[in-house]
Image 1 (cartoon, rainbow, N blue to C red):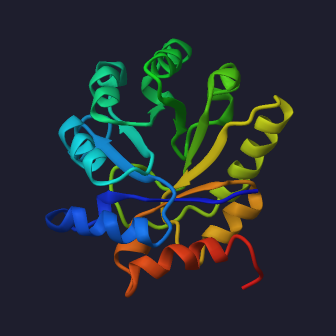
Image 2 (image 1 turned 180 degrees about the horizontal axis):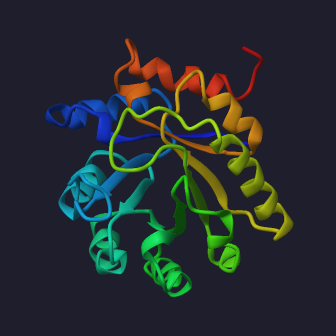
Length: 221
């Protein structure tokens, strides 16, 4: 199973964004993860279309955009136009989830659904054929640098089983508290795509840290 590492620019030094992105790209990052927060669904405010557009100019890597917003459909067109390759929306604020996922795909982007720690897997059971990606939050969203919720490992395992039972080829992504000490457990549980912010950008050698994280998914450590 291939492993994708997606550094989250939420933890990058935004004053040096071009350098930070060049550094993780040189370190072998697979995707760049961009957290969009609206101050309503989660407490913080972060990036919008302008930042996506800026990052798009800085890298050829796929841009993995996580919408922590209410009414995410209001952003689809502008984010696709800005250069997003994938958009992931929260089931908790998407009553028309199937239609919303379809719209993301119509815009030429990978369509993903996100589950908060307290949201059961059956929130996506009816839309598995419409998923290109399923994101399991391993912390409650809204802040970087939070502690990994250990119960998430079993949820990731059950998510992998659910995808397999339905013949889905969707990526299974995890986000929150992913570092050297936690990545192996969720990889063994079936995750294949890993969002890491602080673990990479606060490391002594961020460029090398991506390889360190990947190594923990392939060898005994």
